[in-house]
Image 1: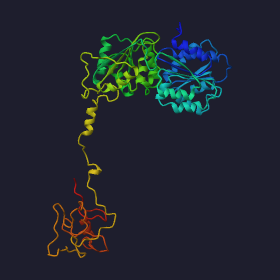
Image 2: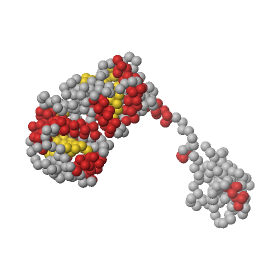
Image 3: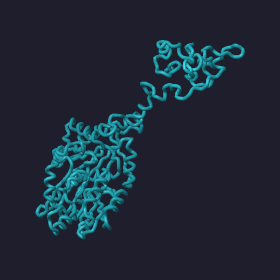
Image 4: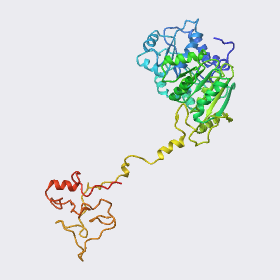
Length: 500
């Protein structure tokens, strides 16, 4: 396995785990946490009778689960211990047959394991050790409800081991729920990358990120490069651009099949691919020796993801280099990372790739990831501020008068008599009209009001609610009444609303 001497996390955690107590281990990525919990657990399982599943290891991603299983196989090669791995995207029947054999150790992702538990396998009633690796990522990915259901199928008395690279408050609360009087093993500052990783920040416009990456691959000393992109669509786009440029590359994200992910990772591990493009979900399972550079094409959404990303280089005592491409609209995310690491990065500018001022429409349109090719937020907002086309909104349309209630009683001074003749003032004059009002409309009425009383704007007597036959439209001729109503339904009076 290539172990000459224990790493700090192994040196401190292994004796504590052998005591049988719960352990909370916090160590930087790439410091040997997997062997730190596998070696003492394998030793313990050799001391107890076989015939049931006695150890369960939960990992957030299938790549990490495969990495743990590979380490288990290597460390227990000469030991009479069996194991199986359970994760999504693989042959369900083959995994079911393996679980029916009652393996001593099961390595699994929470979702697929829960599917099997609903079918009654594996039997966890005799479980002795529960291991949660990369617990912070499991919480980030929303596995907490699944983990709680899995915990209910285990015996209360067991040893719990929780390992993580970062220690946010959510992990503290989670550890307090499942660990009983744990021994805390902390190697190095929490939420900090290893010191052997040289970190660099490059200011560049969003649309120039891929072009800059190709320039560095062509002229720089980037031998084995892991490129991180925030979205699956962006990762696929970056990968296609690299392949078109003649760069041997692979891509892994959750939309790729398990076979495609495995082939891409193996080709990168064996040097067939110079570049591997990945998303944060897949980052935890990438355990490849000799990665010279990690390139953050997108600034990660959370500062903890930054720690895990650059932890893929500088492993096992080797030096590494991490570069982060920062567009103007990503400065706030970078500031959060600086706050977490308690350091300030110096922005580097490369000739021909200087970042435009913040607010420039070229600042965010990137060749890959969210918002690719759209311009920055200013340009996007302008589309919504433009005048709206098409039919007006409901609130912009003229409202029909409410005729649901009883009509106001006619007023003698401005309404016709029931016989249909216009009313007269005492001096014989017709009632005057306010400018913009139709005949028979009282000042203060809204447009359309009062048009059912008196003569309408077409000069005809309007209908009036009251006893049958009072003020009807044109007597008893149905065709004439329909023409007067303009083809609208019953009970509608007055002219049609004027379009705005």
